[in-house]
Length: 94
Image (cartoon, rainbow, N blue to C red; front, side):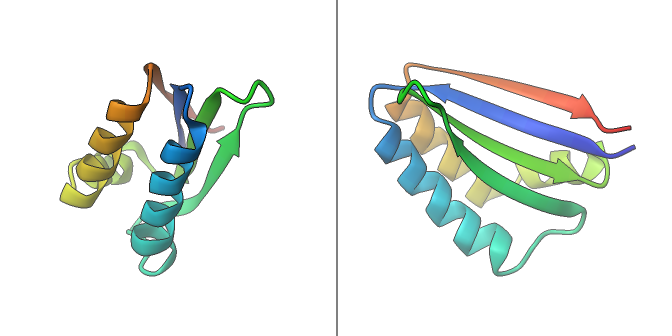
């Protein structure tokens, strides 16, 4: 079953997180999409303090395989330094 992954950051420095996410998306996902990735988007909250990474995958296994990769872990570890809090949610897509 297809899944959507949403990672939301609360931060006083949204530009720092957006820069990291944009670089990661362009370098790792756009140039050489991993198996199972349907698409990815970056979202900025209208409150000016929320940034989200949204992606859709063919199945949960493809998402988990990507989340175990070194580039993914490095990018999201850096974002945690700049974030006040974050939340991860995986949705099933019907």
